[in-house]
Image (cartoon, rainbow over all chains, first blue to last red; front, side, top):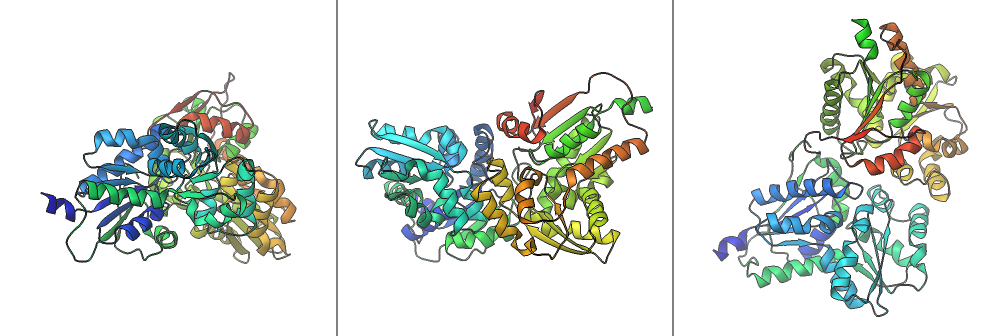
Length: 270
Length: 270
């Protein structure tokens, strides 16, 4: 049985291109693995939607990837991880890894003052999931959440440096610019793209959930003994729910790798 | 028969709250009319999606409003108007009015230098629909289209004035800041919310499609003799595809009026 599982791909989904920063880290940790990536580009962004809607869209994504025979599911979207992980773990018969828990664990390990800030989309921050995850490790840690709704559109527009992104980041992060926290979690898969901007304002260590999540994926594959053992080229396949052109254009910058082998699919009414 | 039609509501749809600026103008022109408004908030924004996807979503919206018995359909979304109007007019058995043609007519009437600029979402600008509509009136008019993808998220965030919106507008509009055009069309229903910012950069008359569209709605109702004649309170009902809270919060600023009588509906997989 194990040989079969070894050869099965890892499934990764996100609302759009953001999760490619997670896939990029998985490729670094596990270059031999087959990977299927699904970006729900016809319904992006999830960060402004209600929990109920994010739940519905995420389950459709997971079911699609399951239908392709994956051995492990990565929810490479903070908004979806924040809300749907419990539900997905009940309904999906393979290990499900989100980006919130690995980021929370890393933050808890790094903070010395026991004061952590988390930045993310409106829905992620409202969910309080990072706070719960961090406090479940050490409930003496104080967690401040800050929603930064304009970061995603700015990054998608490619304005990764310059006045506008600096000013916007300054406004959102002014509350933590002081010495009130010693660790900042990038609670959205887009944010690593403006790491430099954020670092120039908040002079504390940044936790990139993508890196932590990739380590967790490796751990789980090893633990379950389903890491790919055979040689041979690793397959990468991409699925999107809207037309592929823009995904390829923006996505290659996120993945730092060529995107080919991409198909448009329909999920529900997309 | 006419009495029946008189009492039927006008149907208005948009991808989200933006179309409320059109509804606001219709309320001014036609305060006696019943209006149903549908905001497809579970799939907003349309301006970044492919024409094929915008087509599919728009038809679902139109069919929903038709099922409620409307006498006229207003496509209060520039992206959708730019792409789907022909298709909707084929499939829908009531008059269909978009925001592009009224805006184009007004621009053609105002420009003296015969040089017009249009600002809008990526998909609206790429469609070239304003250019075609303006040139079909006077093909000696030169039309420049500029996509301003960050305006919608900025407006939804409520950053209607200040450094960030001023700088962003400055970047997008620098090409037309000079004397190269004498008329600017606001080709997105969100943009009237930052009219002052845009005016402070581009010192030319602005065409607000919402105002022109409301006049067109009145013209068509009069022409078809289906304007509401009976007295009695006018009904307003709102439908959204995601939860209503955020729509109400942001929307009341757009509509300049209280939003009550609102229901969440499902369209396809929303």
